Image (cartoon, rainbow over all chains, first blue to last red; front, side):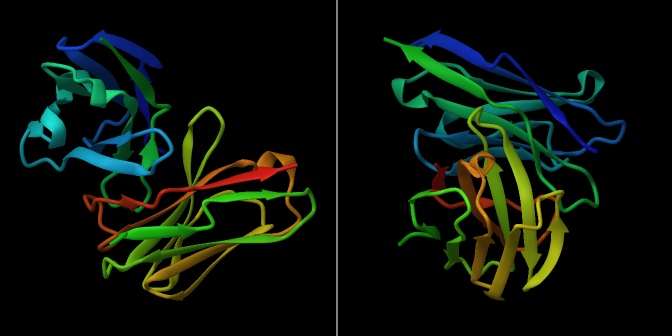
Length: 113
Length: 114
């Protein structure tokens, strides 16, 4: 089964600093990859997704992620953190030909003023 | 106008009871899902329906039974509730069951079993 590993269950950044959230997938065949965000007491919202069209994917709210096959990674970045970025972030994977979306354990982002 | 809605938002009940959670989407999507998020925020797929047909049925106790009366609705019925069923349950939908389709999530139902 496809799986993703999110390194770091908790990331704390200063407002204006770079946000870097790490995600690695386990598959010999590149899967489809997604980043979702969950704000407190809300459902998940798609930030961006990799569908093999382009390796650098831009999403909403200034986030972007780069697919690197050689590193089996899909790390999420934002150049300058904002207080409103405080949330839970989930990396998710879907294998080619599979209906199922499998989520990583999540990374909690806190932003310090 | 809410895209994916769930009722109730909170559900507190006693062990052994039977309860239902309702989900509706007004996006015109063909596929709907139920996820369970545990206390450590780990999300796991439970079921998925595509055009009212069950396409994902994970290893879930048979006390859980999904029902899809039409494409816009997917309900979750839980019999004989146990303490371990306490979690947040999310409904989601996507246009089709495609590999790259975005899933749209509801706000969640927080179930607490006492």
